[in-house]
Every structure is written in structure tokens, then in C-alpha cells.
Amino acid sequence: MIRAGMAEVDITPALGSEIPGYFGPRLASGVKDPLYAKSLVVETESGAVAFIVLDAIAVSSPTVQSIRASVQAETGIEPAGIFVSATHTHTGGPVSTGFGCTESPEYLEWIARRAADSALLAYRSRKAARIGFGRGQEEDIAFNRRFFMKDGTFRTNPGIGNPLIDRAAGPIDPEVLVMRIDDAEGNPIGVVTNYACHTDTVGGTELCADFPGELSRFVKRELGEQAVSLFLFGPCGNINHIDVSGKRKRDPDHFRWMGRILGAETVKVRDKIIASDEVSISALNGEFTVDLRRPTEEEVEAAGKFLESEAHDLRETLYAKEILKIAASSDSGPATVEVQAVRIGELAVVGLPGEIFVEFGLDIKERSGSAYTMIDTMCNGTIRAYICTREAHRQGGYEPRMTFRNRFPVETGERLVELAVQLLDRLDTK
Image (cartoon, rainbow, N blue to C red; front, side, top):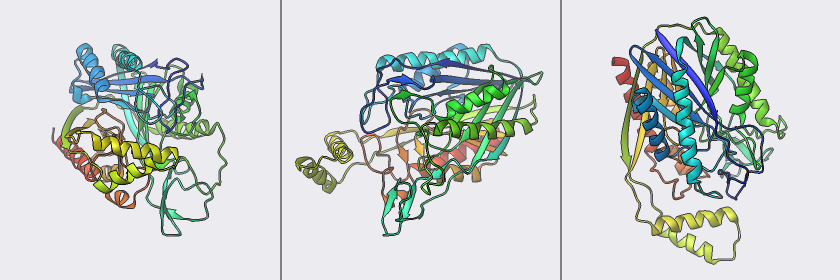
């Protein structure tokens, strides 16, 4: 027998709050749509898991630990089975210190309580349930953002209609994975959608949940206001919404269009799923440590010379300051990295930290023994940086460029994949 519950609580910060995600500072001037912490709790005789997702650019390890402790104390769910992740919206609250933003300790403390509340509400609302899984495809809203250029160079986001573009440097993952959660009578409790595309389609200074917010509104229109839509942010460190061909003109409501497209696919897949009241649950997690990259003497010297020059490029100035900050710091690690895996019947869910390149997600899916494999990134807070392929490190570009936070070693992605596959294999034998 399955028991499941879902809940959502508002985590929209006050106007005037700092907004992380860009190189320059932004202060919240309005609210396009509310931000939420949402949760799903699934329980069977074999175990229980909780998925907690925040409309935020990231979630730190201390915040994750606080949420897990609160949820475990109230529910008894083990930390390995408590997934805490972010949708990575670039129009959220001040959860992160970096370019253009300083985190707010007060906001972090508040959202930790609110996120735990959402899980407790989901736990307390659990009822006899039926669950099922399905997959769809959506190829028209996500694009690889790294490109080979005709002049032999390499660019990230080279611009719409750039005549020097030769070809994309990598794939996308068009799979739309869906979990259907109904009560025993077949009434919708909610859905989970897993898709790989950067949630940076809005910009500006109005708070917004980006396209997962519109996806949620679409689901509620179709399934009822009680239905909760949980979005798991797939591996998309090198994937975004920009079609460089320029075939579709972007407008300020592009995120709404994307959300409706993804919502329609979610509901279509959901309606075809045959839900069951008999599944087993098991969860595992694992860790490894890495030493952090440091700049070479040549990189430090070049950064110093740049800052002494009369150059005024904001982005390059910030990067140069980051190099000198790393050089002046004794912090070279080791950093601890966590991977989670859970099996719910035919579904495996892998929780990975950081902004993971799509190739790593595709590799895990190919090697998974489950019929369906969701990959939830920006999860558990142990990495808040890009995790690039070796090829991307050789090519350079925006994502592998070193900053104080963005300096995990080249092999990190491969180690994440290997640990994820090991955990999935162990779940197969439980």
C-alpha cells in the first residue's frame, strides 16, 4: 500500500531583496509570480522518501542539513531519502553570495523553516495513493548553448543569428519524465516533471519562478487547484532556452510559453499513465572528496596586470578579482560531494549537486537499470558550480571558467556518474 501527500508554501521575499544570478546587482522591484517551496512525501511498508524543491537559484549545504534535520525529526525519514533541491530560477530570493548579490541570513533561515514546513504538511496530508510513471518528448524549447564557430573559435551563447556559428558543441536531453500521484479514488494529488533546461528565461528585477511556475499553473488549470506540480531541474549546465536560429521571436512572456508547452506534455503523459498502489521504496546516498582547482602563477599574474590596466569590462574585472581571491586563500579543499539515489517501483531518481552538463545525465540514464530515471540537479547543496565535461574544460568558455566557487576538478563529473551508477546498482540488489 502506498501513502502519499504533497504541499506547497510561499517563500517570496520582500521587495527590495537582492536577486542573485547575474554579474550586476539587482533589487526586487515587483512580483511576476510567487515563489514556493514544494514537497512530495511517498511512503510504503518498505520505506519513505521526501522530495523538497525550492524556487531559488541554489540551496546551500547548511540549509539542506537544517531542512533534513527538521523533516527527519518529525517524520523519521532518513537523510538519504530526503532530496532538497532548487529550481535554479534566476529571479529568486537572496540565497547565494556571488556576483551582484549577498545572501541574506534571515531569508535563508526563513526558507529553511518554510521548506521543512512544506514537507511536514505533505507528510501530514498523506493518504492512500496510486503512483505511476511515464515519458514524453519536447525538443523545441531547449538548446545546447555552446557552439563551434566558423573561424575556429568557441563560444558560449554566441548570439541569435550570428553568421559565424558553425554547429552546436553538444546534445540536449528532450525527455520529459513524469510521475503521476493520485489518491485511491483516482483524484489528482499532483505530478512531478523532470526536464533539462536552464531556468533563466525572465531576467529583470521582478521575482518569478520562471517556466516551472507557469508549468504549475497549467497543471492546476487541467487537474484542479489542489494539484501540486513539482519540477526537478535536470542536467542542463550547457542547455538553455535560446534558439540561435532566431526562428521564434522571444518576448517578455517567453517563460509562460515554455511553461505551457512543458505543462501540456506533462499532462498528456500523465493522462496515459496507469497508476498502481503497489510499489517498493529504497534509498541510498554516498560521498567522495575532491581537492579544488587553483590558478597558475601565470593566471594570477595576468589577473593582477588586468586590474592595474585601464580596462573597464565588468565581467573580466570580476573574474580577475576572483583569481586573486583564490590565490590569497588557503582553501583548496578537500570538498565533500554527495550523491543520492532512490528507487520507487520502476522509477529511479538520482540527486546530483551543481549545474551538471547534459552529457553526464545522458550517461547515467543509459547505464541505469530502471525503466525510468529522473535526475534532480542543484540537489543537496554540496556543489554550487558548473560540472563540465573534460572536452568543455579543453574548449574553455563561460562554464569552466574559474571563480572562487567554480573550481571543482576536471574529473568531478565522471566521479559523480560513477557513484550514481554504483548506488543504482546497489538499489537493484536491495
